[in-house]
Length: 67
Image (cartoon, rainbow, N blue to C red):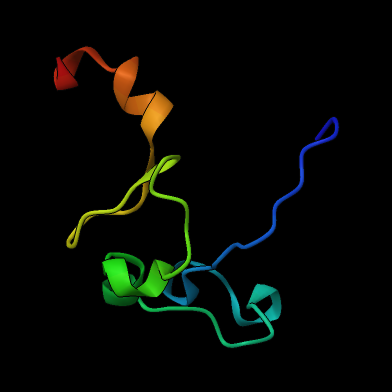
């Protein structure tokens, strides 16, 4: 990814096969849509809303439905 580093990532285990599951067991859909799951994530980069998946703020700026 050309100099980019992913420091923290999560995997939703309900949508992947067991052979691809994260070593820590992954997260449920409900957990992936709960703000507390993303403790420590930078809210200057991410929009975190309960009931939704995290969104990159730049995506929202470029989305006409958010105008």
